Length: 89
Image (tube, rainbow, N blue to C red; front, side):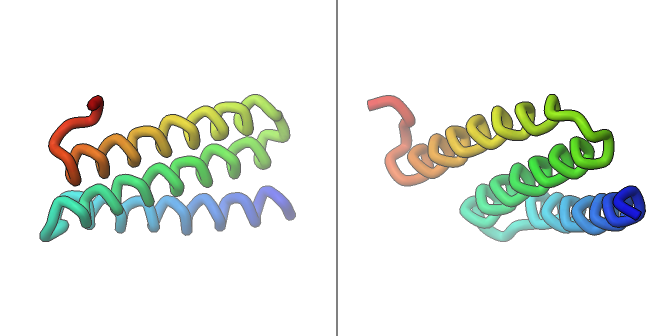
């Protein structure tokens, strides 16, 4: 039962990831692309957590936490670069 729910959720999150990839490629503005990239990071975290639930191991949850921290830092760096033109002052 949990395997079926995880399989359905993996398919839905995978479809959302593909839609974000479309927005990343076609986005009319740079801010749309940064937002799509941030949403793709969130979807990738969801995929990692779902695989961790499916396999029943905690290693994937630690990987998702690390990926979330790196994704947050890169989003902040992209936004700071877009606003000021440099990342490090």
